[in-house]
Length: 155
Length: 155
Image (cartoon, rainbow over all chains, first blue to last red):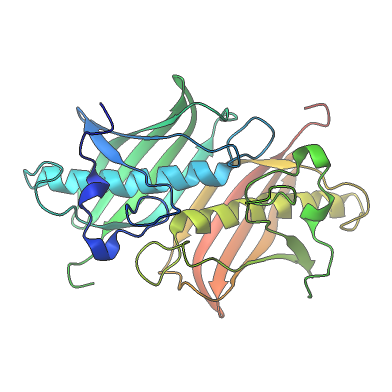
């Protein structure tokens, strides 16, 4: 996938596109972008040198942040697909996080891109549950579990 | 408590004081600081306007980040106290996060300080478990559960 592939977050309505993690209109944010790769979602982010914790490792709060926005993005992509729509086929529905669980399996080395893969494990009404892995150069260093809830259109 | 009260993170050894969340030597980080208030720890952070998610609310990744570092800081404070030491009585021991669980109970309004209160619920060997609340102007908007593990001195 190239960076030109449309991402879910490219189609958030303007009034909900300022999230520090994934809003395309937040000038200082992380601008996370989520796409489909078959039945999984993929979100890639390369940390800056200041996103550190212990020397040489990625800050856990950043790991949590990436898993959080990749989770709500994956939920939105899943909701689209459940309606028979592709990413970019109309605005992306906006989800918020109800619960986030991160297990830090080992230190995440700082430098290469972080690759988050999401798997949709439940869609029920406005709720979508996503299981995630975060890996660096093929090694999974953290897992995420996100419960996302769709904002009502009149919210 | 004034900002002059010594905080746990003021006494991390220099080689582990660059964390984006709580390292006093990370120039662009959040510089989170944790103190005792009786048997609870307190960590206060005022978000910037760009730490947003939905309009008017705090970004969930920031909530997770604050809970994460407040958790490891609380664990360190608890380890000191278990040894009969006060904050500043020698270097603060350094903990890393093994697991972080955040429940977002309601939107966190953006503007006033976020106040995290931590309660130590388990100390067992190198492991410390911390339960946290995050509140804004007295209303709890999120809770955290942190499992922290002490770095070995030779790490």
